[in-house]
Image (cartoon, rainbow over all chains, first blue to last red; front, side):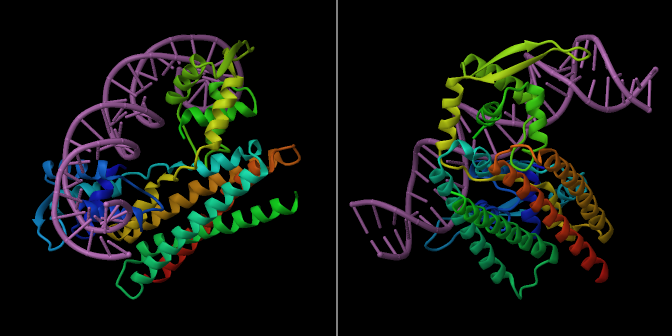
Amino acid sequence: MKGDDIILGILSEKPASGYEIKERFSTIFSNFYNASFGSIYPILHKLTDEQKVTFKTVEQDGKPNKKIYSITAQGREAFQNYLSRPVENKKIKWDFMVHLFYSDQLTPNERMHLIENEIKTRRQECQELEALKQTLAGKDVDKNKIFCLELGIKQKNMVIQELEWFLDSNMHTQ
Amino acid sequence: MKGDDIILGILSEKPASGYEIKERFSTIFSNFYNASFGSIYPILHKLTDEQKVTFKTVEQDGKPNKKIYSITAQGREAFQNYLSRPVENKKIKWDFMVHLFYSDQLTPNERMHLIENEIKTRRQECQELEALKQTLAGKDVDKNKIFCLELGIKQKNMVIQELEWFLDSNMHTQ
DNA sequence: AGGTTCATGTAACTCGTTACATGATTCA
DNA sequence: TGAATCATGTAACGAGTTACATGAACCT
């Protein structure tokens, strides 16, 4: 599972530009994948070479031109191939948790700020995902996708709750 | 946040060999970091060069020799420096969720197996973490570390529950 | 005047994985 | 006999990030 696979997946839903792909990564995909422009554009070029996608340049008024990429039959085949491959292990680098794990080496004040900051950023993320969910409500979106989105929201909410509780219990014992 | 930092963190608790460091990654750290031998050993060599760690070779009977690494004052300083740096974004590559997200392109049967498999592996992980928690119970382990472990268990349990529910609701609607 | 959004792109780099090699011991 | 555990190590490779460049339009 690498960038190629995920981008083909996104394009299997509907055509999109590199910029729009990035947007999906930072919203609905945020809970299970992310990629930067520095990888998206080269992958799009590579997929074009491999004839898995095609593009057409679209002129817009008041905005720069954009290249709208569409998946080809070959691309769909490649994505089907990805879907039938065994699921890889979850890979995670969660810096906050490492900080928290070793926060006995911080002052109580530093630890408090660490946790408070994390709560703030998570809350923001939650609100964005909730807003996205509202946008999708009513529309004919596949139930699997809805489930993925809702699971993401639930997970983040759980972390927020637990952190709030931990912060609270920390204050009372000092 | 890279391998160097985390390994210094592990050694800040107590001396350990490369092999033992790997074990910690695959147990208590599994929820927020992982690394392979291919990175652990070179990092240990590098940290030795930088005088952040030292090692002594320990002979064992019935087992190969091992190198026990200890953190130095310089190493502690470097780790403190890491702890005071701003927290980086969580990075995640969760292949299962990508599969599930696009599982409308699978047969109902394939989707069922996909979810069942994930539930099985998660359950196993949970049991291992629960066992670890039992091992730690009673011992004088820092409350932040306990919290990290418990949060990991809770998160995994939540995913299991949600997947079970989703699987069930899928079956009834077909 | 300066910041933000939209939009695409490349080069250098870094981190970490995969795959291999070695080898003793223990267990079924 | 063969698999698993313990234990360390390296070389080749790959994937993706960071940082940079470009540039128009819009908002304050």
